[in-house]
Length: 185
Length: 208
Image 1 (cartoon, chains in turn cyan, red):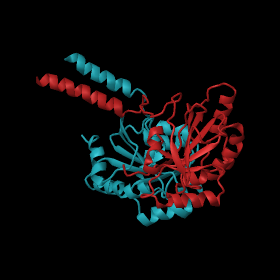
Image 2 (cartoon, rainbow over the protein chains, first blue to last red):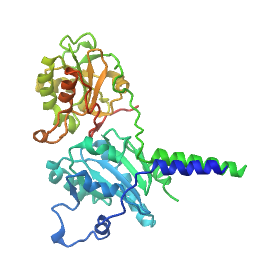
Image 3 (tube, each protein chain N blue to C red):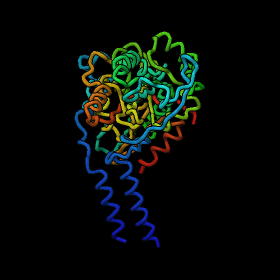
Image 4 (cartoon, rainbow over the protein chains, first blue to last red):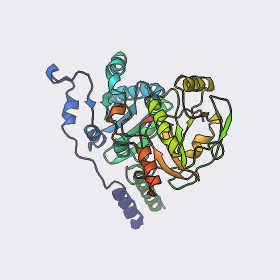
């Protein structure tokens, strides 16, 4: 009896041996979106040229559930499922649930101004948009999830050490909610 | 009884978490490096004729650069000129590009046979542009996105699988051409390293 419980604990410990870093300074930024205009970049969202800059967003060790979606404005199935993430952020915020939607755009650098920026403005996206321009994909895809081939859309949902990876689009809002339910306690 | 149930639940929870965590790698590849890739016959959108991989590529004296790509994916478009250049460099060495369009045109009309033919003629593709009719071939290779490369030797054994180079959006910033590097390795009797790479790409469009 006790053996089984210990075995389970051991497996948990083993499977999650590499842990993320504690939430860093980015959380401070997160908390105050209205920074002084002088501190703002040319875009109303961060533009990362190196995956290392995104990494803290994938390893926060607080009690918020992070829903990190990889997408692009030109990716049709991505744009189709985007409203589900928006709805999730809206409802979770209204219900006081600790859920943070992070929309990592893989739009091309040359198209940030012509495509991503107008898209973000027109839709008034609630999720935290981040533009990731690190072209050396092979270097970082496995760090998001070894289960990921690199096809988009793809979504990582995590809370602390608890992680699930979804290598395809969610078909509906209830589908997304169901995926999130595993993290609700 | 209840205790047993709790223990079972604990074990299941442990399993669930271990599956959900990022390590160890759990990706299940349909075709592994060293596996023999399935032969196939597909129609070339340009001349409307069927081509069998193992029989109809006499220039493939050393191997094949099987390339899943399409008209519509922005990454495939970014790589189009580089795929042409790859063929022009590698076909004389015995490794022609064999391009396959795997998307379902019912979902992506811009990838139907007519559009494929038009694109191939516009860019004067020096290689065949095969249509994966009924989407039978790409699942056998375990392809998931466009563009995606499977480098086979002349016995159809998979030697390299992944992306073309390390700079999708800026050809001028390429530092490693993985496919050329893999061919060079094979030609000098070494194993390609890396033998697999990943890249961002468009999900292959299917209704299945």
